[in-house]
Each structure stands twice: as C-alpha cells, then as structure tokens.
Image 1 (cartoon, rainbow, N blue to C red):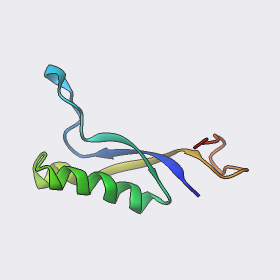
Image 2 (image 1 turned 90 degrees about the vertical axis):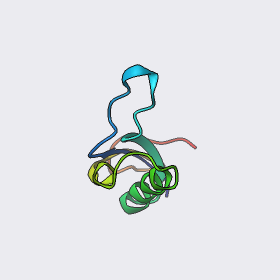
Image 3 (image 1 turned 135 degrees about the vertical axis):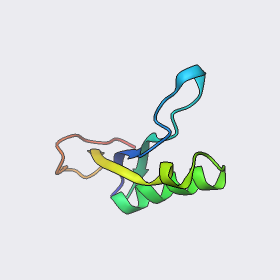
Image 4 (image 1 turned 30 degrees about the vertical axis):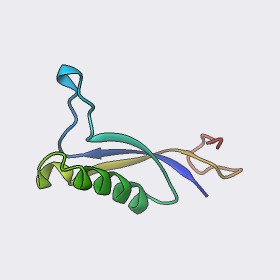
Length: 77
C-alpha cells in the first residue's frame, strides 16, 4: 500500500532566496526506508548539499492508502 511520508534531512531545510528546501520533502512510498532512499538518491545524484546534510533527521507518516489507515488519514491516489 502506498503511503505519504514527510521526510526531513539534517540540512538543506531553508528556502531563503527562493531556492527549494531540498531537506524537507513529501514522498509517496511503501515504507519509510523507501521514502528516505528516494530523497537521498535525488539529492546525491544532483550533488545537493554536503554528505552530512543528506543524513536522515526524521520521517513522519502523514497518510495511508489502506482502507483502514493506521495513521487515521486516508491517501487517495
């Protein structure tokens, strides 16, 4: 089942000057590991931030596409 996660990295969270805050992202994935890997892969391949900025700070489950979501919020795809 697809889930919506809010992923925060340790760095790149500011969007001062109109830049995108790459360290905070909403990700659709099947599990938290996959969610982090999607963000990490993107910032690594695009040479964004330093290695320490790409480390995981937190992942929060926002919504779930399951009929009876454990987080209480339904994700419609």
